[in-house]
Image (cartoon, rainbow, N blue to C red):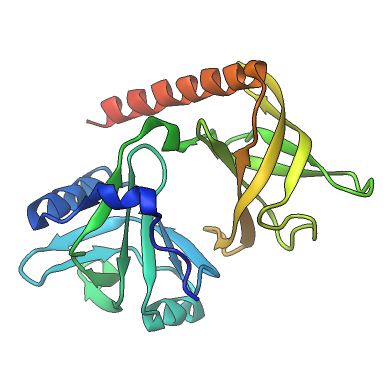
Length: 248
């Protein structure tokens, strides 16, 4: 079964107007926004950007990956999910992907989507965390197997995204809860949280290394921990806005 395209709660955020869809895609291109591309039942994933739009041919162009075998799987896929997870959430599905030759080299081409989801809700915002010296997320493993240390990728008011080496410990499965997890948020302090695994995805880094991305949900955080999370998200939000303003 293909991975879910959208949830019931997201249906109200569909954008159907061709003009609005084109405006959103054009803005993604202008801001060079990083998009997550997921296919092959969610087993394959990479990151790309919109590099061109072609209204006449009803197409948009995106950067292509460097691995030929990976690209063949992408081009053969009939269900490809494109998503922007930080800030305003945007996602859509394409059923056909092709490879084209542009002036600057090869690219992937997809049809301009008939609709997409644009979700602007603060508690769903995933703000990226610093990639240099990323904050560690320390998860105690069962049966006294020590701690699993994952690097923090992003934070929202509801959870975190992390990345670590594959394969993961067998205890890391979707739905599993872990108590006494430590996250040392820079400038804020250390949390003590219960985290639940919500999603696991393999990704290929720019250096062609396979890593595991694990999304966790905060489970009933205490008032003190909730305050730490809110303060850190506010810091990341201010930094994101400042970067966007400087880029204009």
